[in-house]
Length: 124
Image 1 (cartoon, rainbow, N blue to C red):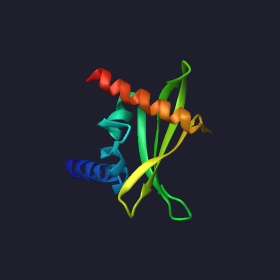
Image 2: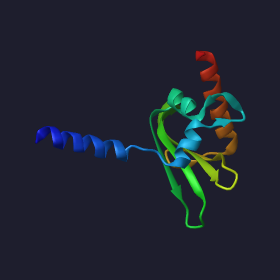
Image 3: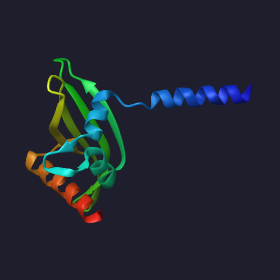
């Protein structure tokens, strides 16, 4: 009985851990500014404990959010990086960056992506 229960718990846990197709698209995708690595590699190399989720806005737009820990200005922050999905084209692009729920300018986001890319290249 215990083995059957354990097996059922494992199956439920495994089924709850699957990513949406939008999350998979972003994870496996590459940015034009950093074709050397997937987005997942960039995130895993730079953010602590990243979580990925997709959502749809009331106007039908689909987003993928990545939330994780990082250091900014020598202080720990919770960062959110958001991509918007173009379902018709099957593509995605950067949409927003927040540190501790405070929106950051696109210039900051470009700098972060460049830094992430440099770190991947340095480690290769």
